[in-house]
Amino acid sequence: MTKVITDVVCPFCGTLCDDLAITVSDDGKQIIDCQNACAIGAEKFLHTSQGHGRVTRPRKRQPDGTYKEITYDEAIEYTAQMLAKAKKTLWYGWASTSCEAMAIGHKVAEKAGTMVDNCATVCHGSSLLAIQDVGVPSCTLGEVKNRADRVVFWGCNPAHAHPRHMSRYSIFPRGFFTTKGHKGRKIICVDCRYTDTAKCADEFIQIDQSYDYEVLDAFRTVARGQPIPDVVGGVPKEKIIKAVETLKEGRFGVIFFGMGLTHTLGRNHNIDIAINLTRDLNDYTKFCIVAMRGHWNVTGSGQVLSWQYGFPYCVDLTRRTHARYQPGDTSSVDLLRRKEVDACICIASDIGAHFPIEATRHMAQIPSVCIDPHINLTTEISDVHIPVALVGVEVPGCAYRMDNVPMACRKVVDPPEGMLTDEELLEKIYVRLCEIMGDA
Ligand code: SF4
Image 1 (cartoon, rainbow, N blue to C red):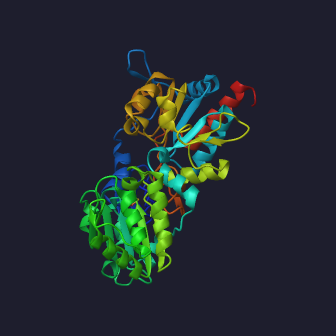
Image 2 (image 1 turned 90 degrees about the vertical axis):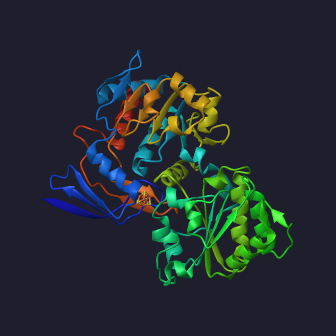
Image 3 (image 1 turned 30 degrees about the horizontal axis):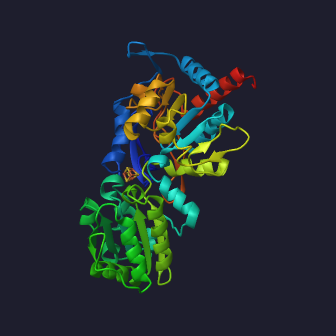
């Protein structure tokens, strides 16, 4: 006998598709089938039951480099002692856990006086800086589905990174005011290479690498009726003029941008000018801009940090009395490269896979803990690896979609017996830390 759980939210990418149907065994221990998800989303559910890469108990690295299984109590003791002894601990990650777990983790971080940073530091941190500078005229993905007839993908490739984004929201679906589906939409893709998303676009504009700022500036200039040079960033002016006319003629438009914009030359200034182009287009029609956030709850981490401390990432809690924020100074990569932290916790993310080698090397040389359901590159350089239940599969929790809409993720199966959730683990670390620091 099996049962089907419907309306399940996919905990993989920032699209947070909420229409999955998961078939589970009657005893609630095994996932049999996953419907409606894309290949990468389905894999997150199906591999859970097959146990790939799962360890069910904490492990501690031995002097010879091998790992020995330890108890959760021993792992909690190690983590609490490390936090109490370190002068400055970096606590990085949070993108693949629930907002509830983040709130408890930040309580521990506040108590120990650590640095707290999330994956935005290596993806959309520049977007957050630009939004703080100039604001953001944004909308929900539901509005895109129901209203948008002009869609721009700039420096992003949802065909690979957010596979159902185009079918659920941005290109193909029929909405309340978009009854013709993709036939009623004009899609423009701007990128330095021809991607699979570009194949779905009506117009592909190939720009020279790192000339995004110049091309966006040309778009703004044309939108204001001013002349531009014959070629800007490798794009002929006729192409830019035609694209701007297409955007101005729409009823509702949206610009989706990704790391092809946040990580090319100009960084936050690229986002700044993209937001200002959106503003300019609002002189002619309704236009919005949305960041293509990657990890499924990286947006939630920025939200929770913001409502707790006023800053979305790179938060310095070492003063204990108040939070400080100085990206470039209090950001994880810089702290590790400058060897400024003497302990590190990586939770629900993977420093080893995403950080520059000097930063990763320093993490490998200081006391470190990795809290993650799976073995990954960071667990292999950490002193202690603490496995936890998978949020959105084995534990329910709140997550924020890329458009800042909070969603309730469901639990579909039980975690392996005796395995702690992020929330339980962090609460136990907090209790032990209070005992060590004399504030039970
Ligand atoms: S597009 Fe993203 S959220 Fe949707 S099913 Fe695929 S991985 Fe999951």
